[in-house]
Image (cartoon, rainbow, N blue to C red; front, top):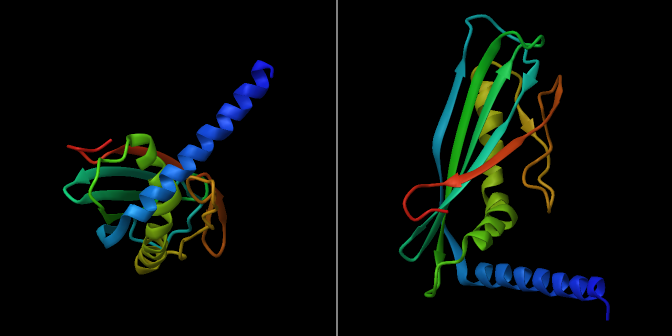
Length: 181
């Protein structure tokens, strides 16, 4: 065998091992709680405004704890006027999902990142979606709808109001503090 074929086989085996490790982590864990820890919306002018741009920022973090781990997803949704010259509103939502973990060692950071991206985000997404939608309406704006979350993607790729579609959801992962990533 030549080196490129051996490298390809080695990469396939490594990918299969990562997939199996994630399946094992899912089998050893369970969702024990999910809660909204931040629910904030602020209209930044007294008059009715039309939203021109939305730059949805999503961050995630995890923290190990005795008997499991917590994963936080935070969304910051600044909305600006159609010309982009004036900030119209700010909406922020944070959701924490708590998972139990059968006895054993703490999962490594790279496995936790995979769990956050491929499992936990799908658990938290309905809470994030509902928060953005409800809060935008409560402050008198068109309701924000975020697009579908597709497998293999870190975040939805689109968001829109009934009048306008927006692209570009940025993501960031961080530590929740002591015991985190």
